[in-house]
Image (tube, rainbow, N blue to C red):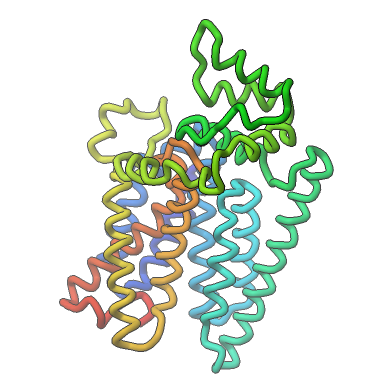
Length: 340
């Protein structure tokens, strides 16, 4: 099953890359996607990582294809992939915003495009309602409006790590005493381990309330974001351990900072394109927002492990790399893009 899903991914990557209107670039992008260890190593180890990567590929393909061909079926297939991604990993919630924005800036003047826009917007609203409904059920069960406890744990870990966790500000005496005992234990605990012990002892609501009370300022949640961004640029996309020795794959695993630089260059090209053409290059903007959104969410919401968490952005970044190569081939950074 893993092989069939992987083969389907490669086929979808090739069909999406073919929009670059260069068979040679599309072939090499698909080849790189298929052989770099970070992609094929995850399916046998952690299914959620594999689904996050493959789901990103299928979401991008169906969204782009729906807009280009005017197929309402593909628009709803895109919606289904978006729902699966959001429920698989709540950090994908940014995709709802990206989809809603991309359909809003579509071509409203053409009847066929309007039909896709209406279906796309309806799909985004549907996913939003379902996501909020799931979060409401979590509130009924655990008294916190959240889709997952991991966000509470991450806030605790980041606040403890960046120094914005003020334990004296917590009014829950029992909670405060327990955290004091963990921090002053003879054997020093890892912060993440400490967070897991705390949430197991007190549950989501009491931990969430304590984190809110402990923040020294409103900007406490943003403290340390510069350090996390720096750390993320020095990381490498992760390969699943146990498949290939790490020392053999480290030199060929892409550096996340390199692709962040690529996104910055692409953003500059898009701005120049808009200034010259007076319109948005729709597909390029979608890929850019998808990849940049994933990076932004991981940097703002996770304390570490960026090389793994940013894996879903890799397919979009690879397509943007192909776009850059295509424009270099044509000796023009404004003439060609995925939309033309």
